[in-house]
Every structure is written in structure tokens, then in C-alpha cells.
Image (cartoon, rainbow, N blue to C red):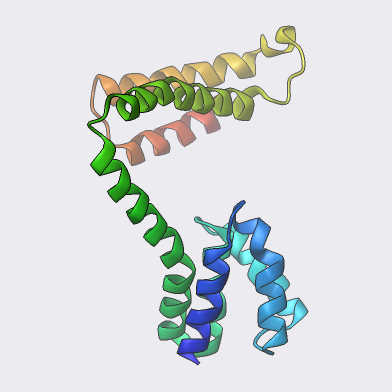
Length: 179
């Protein structure tokens, strides 16, 4: 049973491009064909996996593995689905370590930094204000409150070196008070 779990989730991990949601139908088909999980039970697994932190595919593998073989099954299924990505990252890291001193590679990575920063900023803006279609709609008390909390978080981290968890708790409390 443990070997079957490992092989199934290793196979899923090898083709899991596009995120966890992209492979959920494959996981469902495979585990239903093996008779491990029914349709209703898979829907419950999908719901729980989506609510838990982490990848939905990894969480699903863990829950299915646990259902089939307890804690050893959960561990084997999780390792099976994560191992292909881990091996690929290790291979790419080894490749880039050998090439990191070349001017072209260093230049490419320096060029990627502003792009990654811009993508993160865009995601933050889109997440925080994406539901507004016009710039005039952004100018309201909720935006002011959000920026106030953001500024307070930045100040607490930079000036006072607060732990991120403390900043998250303070942000939640400020959100409750302001909103």
C-alpha cells in the first residue's frame, strides 16, 4: 500500500505544472479508480485541502495517504508528490551555482529583481484594491485605514524589529478596530 501511494503521488508530482488545482482532477481520477476514495469523500478532501495552508495537491495527497495507511501513508504520499519538484529545484540550483559567476547569468538575475519586485507590488495592489475600477474609488476611508496599517507594520518591522507574527497579530487587531 505504501509503495502504491508513493508511486501514484510521485507520478502526479512529476506532471503537476500549473499549481495544485490543475492536477486535482488527475488525483481524483486515480484515487477513485483504485477505490481509495469516493466522489463525496474526495470533495471533502478537496475542501479541507483548499482551506489548509499550503498547496491543495500536497494537502490532498497527505489526507488521502493518511486515510489509506495512517501517518506512514500521509508521509509517503506527501514525499511522493513533493519529491519531483525538490529534485528539479536541486538540479537547477546546482546548474546555476556552476554558472553564477558568468557575467550573463549575473546580469540576468539582476534584471529579474525589479521584475519580481514589480510583480509582488502589483499583486499587493491588486489584492488590496483590485475591486476598484477607477482611481477616484480608491480615495476613501478604507484605503486610508489600509495604508495606515501598512505603514504601521513597516514601521514596527524596520524601526523596532518586531517579529512578523507579532506584526500580523497587531495588524489583525488594528483591522478590527479600524474596520
